[in-house]
Structure formats: C-alpha cells, structure tokens
Image 1 (cartoon, rainbow, N blue to C red):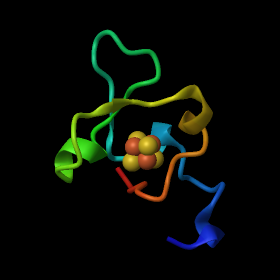
Image 2 (image 1 turned 120 degrees about the vertical axis):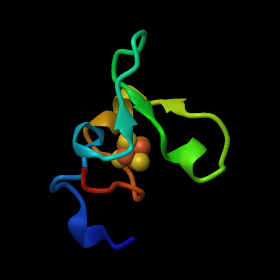
Image 3 (image 1 turned 180 degrees about the vertical axis):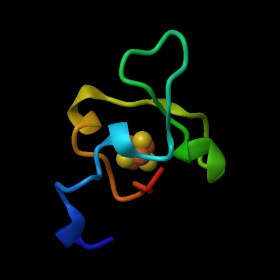
Length: 58
Ligand code: SF4
C-alpha cells in the first residue's frame, strides 16, 4: 500500500502468490483466483522483477 517497501523483496519471484505451472515461463499469479477476481494470470515480464501491491511473504 505505501511506496516505502518498493524495490526491496517484492519481486514476483519472492511472492507467496506466484506459482510455477508446467507451460509457463515467468510463472502464474494466483492472487486473482484466491480473491475471486477471475482466473489466474501469467506474470508479465515487465512486472516479474517489480511485483505489485498485493505481494506477500512466502
Ligand atoms: S503480480 Fe503481485 S501478487 Fe502476483 S505474484 Fe507478482 S507480486 Fe505477487
């Protein structure tokens, strides 16, 4: 929620919502299904190093 956590350990790689499924390169974000916001999404290359505001510790 606040920008002070930006750039620390908030990459999708370290996020508890990220999953590796067989046919994906960067992984899948499961935040959407877990919060009833629609199907899980492929993590886009532009986001994978940055993460997003929903990031959570594994
Ligand atoms: S998009 Fe956000 S919630 Fe999804 S894996 Fe990346 S940091 Fe986590």
